[in-house]
Amino acid sequence: MLLLKKTGDLRQYLDKKMKEGLSIGFVPTMGALHKGHISLIESSKKDNSITVCSLFVNPKQFNDPKDFEKYPVTIEKDIYLLESAGCDVLFIPSVEEIYPEGNTQQKKYDLGYLETIFEGKYRPGHFQGVCMVMHRLLEIVKPHNLYLGQKDYQQCMVIKKLIELENLKINVVIGNTLRENDGLAMSSRNMRLNEPERKQAVKISETLSFIKKEIKPGYIGDLKERALQYLTAENFKVDYAEIATADTLRILENWDGKQPVVALVAAYLNEVRLIDNMLLN
Ligand code: AMP
Image: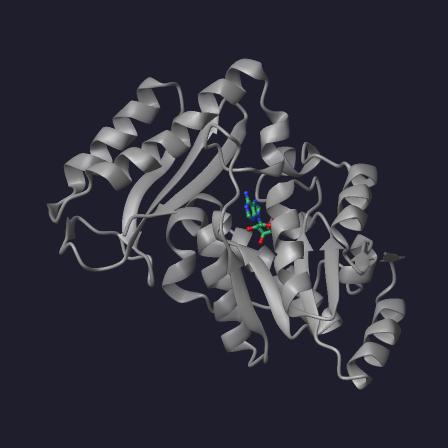
């Protein structure tokens, strides 16, 4: 595996591969890798000749500076995992490499409704930061195929919107959420949970499974309320426990039994904020 830190070096390598007609798959990450990330690398390897993974903890998408400071960093293990998975190139840029102009030039991405709900509402500025880094990374890597995880459901929609807004010709492939044996969605943030918190954390995916089992056509407000009350009683500080249309993320109070729907939860366990989601039909 090639390990590159400079944009120029990466471009030189990829230009050569593209001239040879090879397809490029790209898996952007913030490191602290787990099997969920690796599953995206594996998908990319199946579809492309060259798989590029980036590892960059983007300061601009952390609305909470404490969350940024405490974001886990496990670079040596990440390199080992990527190399074992057969990743071709690992790009680890510095902040200056990604944002050479510093803090000044902030473009506003018109994400519309998507930015007003769920993660957009509870993490102001977060999706602008995501778009900023993704736009930059996509310009640098110029992949044919981009691999994202359903774990970050709304982020997938935001990045698709960014690709549309910027007229980029990139195909997006969304990978299933990989889970621990008890159902907890794999996440870099799980490393920050202590033992009792780790046991407690599974209640988020249990709540999503409960919603999936119980949802019936008609009024669904009471089901959402039960989910919220359960998590609150279990000591979560819940940002949202909602059911929304799977394609547009409109919050639903009534369901016709046919429309594709997704349940989404974001909740704090003490200091650690966890998110998860499940398609319900
Ligand atoms: P992150 O490093 O958390 O920014 O995640 C990098 C990519 O991995 C994103 O596209 C995530 O949606 C995806 N990802 C994170 N957790 C999982 C998971 N448990 N299963 C599959 N993909 C995931």
